[in-house]
Length: 200
Image (cartoon, rainbow, N blue to C red):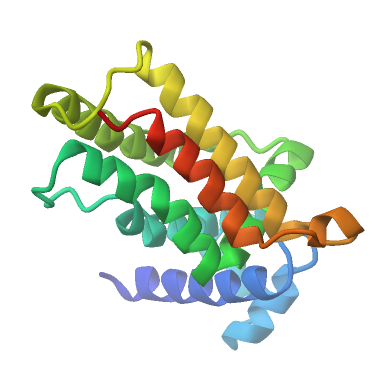
């Protein structure tokens, strides 16, 4: 790793801390420069603009949570790996709910700013699907997973539902109904429903 790469990574680390502590929309390049002890002009040496830095932070957070969802070296059954995958949503919410708040803000930011340089981010998301499909295939072959028909549709429907729930629970809480249940238990209920439809 070059010195430039190390400094760039340092800026990303400092920006991630600020985004998780505050919000994507409220943190400025000036804030990031101050937190990292660098000048604003130096930040622009490593990033063409704020958009590139925000996407770099999303990629960093994405790589940090990936292992929580799948350890591809595992030799457990296909169902056990799928179970671990779905349970990771709740574990991440329990341990780091601010990640889901960031994802919610990141989605809104990309839409509002018209950011379209998300190919690497999308490619990384595909790795989650590939690992899931491998576990599903192995699980159906060994008999631990019940076939669901269109597995890609099942994957997208269930992961979108869980991710949306986690993002909603991480950012809301302003009305009475948002405080009527245990948020973590809501995620467990949805996860259990999904897993019960897969277990052979």
